Image (cartoon, rainbow, N blue to C red; front, side, top):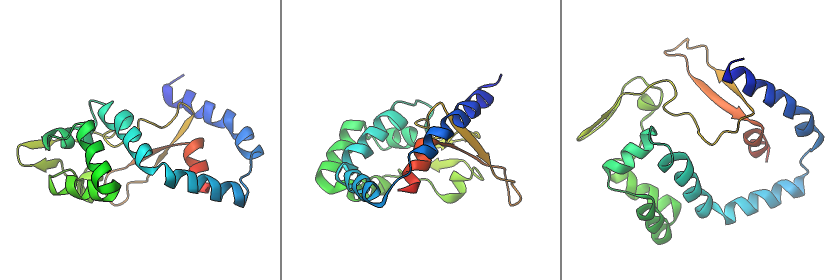
Amino acid sequence: MTGDAAAFLRFCAGLPGFFRRPLDAATCRQRIADGIAARERNFLAMLEHGVYGRPSSPYRALLSQAGAELADVARLVDEDGVEGALERLRRKGVYVTLEEFKRRRPITRPGLELPLDESAFDNPLVGQARVTLRSEGSRGRQRHAMVDLDHLEHEAL
């Protein structure tokens, strides 16, 4: 059995429990409020595990090119909040255009060129029980996205 098939089976096995736990309005409001309260901490945790913890991440290469280690980003977030930190990083070349994200062209910045493969923008934080969705690719390359039940629950909030 391939990894994708096993992940799909784990996703399917989790569906009954997922549907047995409906989200009421009060729970949704509380979880959203909790997420907003922890936004900066969650952002930095996502960077630590999903970007700095993944050597092949194009975001890691862009941050490295800008001279921004995790502690530097944490300092920016502490000083300017998430939006302010992202704006300062964008000015240093830490961004991805739509054409780059869709892999229609490589990420190119002064002194850096990153060719991108199909998995370049995969979310490494998606769980082991996931389904991979694929576009038809009628207007360019076929693209895929991985979704797990935690992501679906988050979107449902």
